[in-house]
Amino acid sequence: ELFMQYLREYLTQLFEQYQTFFSPDVPQSYLMNHLTGSFAETLKWWLRSEKEYPPEEVAGFWMAVNC
Image (cartoon, rainbow, N blue to C red):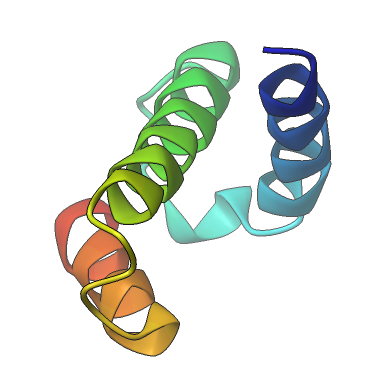
């Protein structure tokens, strides 16, 4: 859980740089929560699936759903 907390904080800083790519109608706090949460859960899913897919493909899955 500590790792996930740090990961979410890092992801929030990273995603804040790209918030203009998303709808301005969505509150920033919700957007950051959604992006960081879905990314962290994607990472957990990928690790549980024993890295069945290459990381680039998993990143593509995440992008297809969130962008």
